[in-house]
Image 1: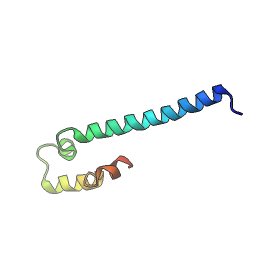
Image 2: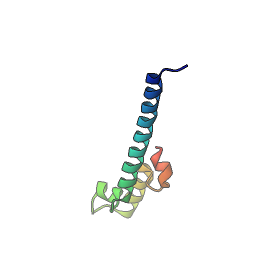
Image 3: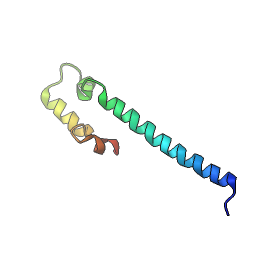
Image 4: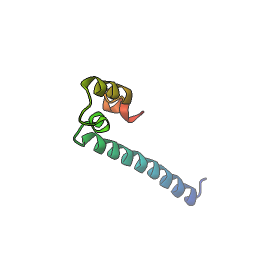
Length: 71
């Protein structure tokens, strides 16, 4: 038989993990919604299309969002 304290602690830990997951997803989604191009911001206005494409590939920006989330 488990004590009420252990049950409460397990519930709090489970809720904490769910909260961390929810916050992580919200922050990731928020950064994906922001306007602008990350590669353009890093390289600046004078970047060539080839250098932008290379940086996007290196950073994995061409991958779907669910793949980028788990990287």
